[in-house]
Image (cartoon, rainbow, N blue to C red; front, side, top):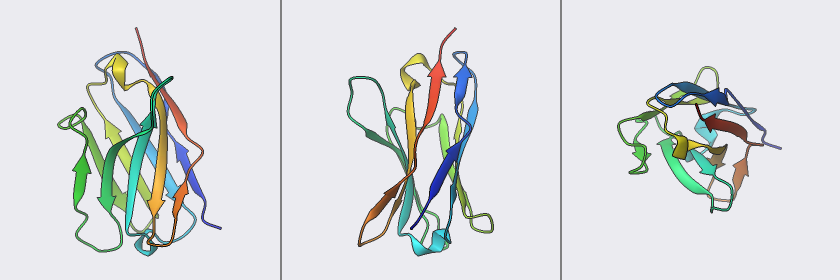
Length: 118
């Protein structure tokens, strides 16, 4: 069973930065893509950023709301995907989830809380 373990969430002031990590129990090359999603209270879960993990090209996608502020990256040696979040805003407050996608199914982490508040 694939396990994804997120870490790095916390409380940060507006304008601050956080780096989230998602450690996979298997090689990230075995997934087509890996992504970060978030879900704020009363809202649907939304895609934040995604990276191709099954090949070496590492192409990325970002939601418009985070472009220029968030960066997704992967470390294949550590089987880990990161989300660097800069210039954080209160509206970035949410539980952030890591997802690993295969053609046959998706795997989710348990989530990590990010709170942006002064």
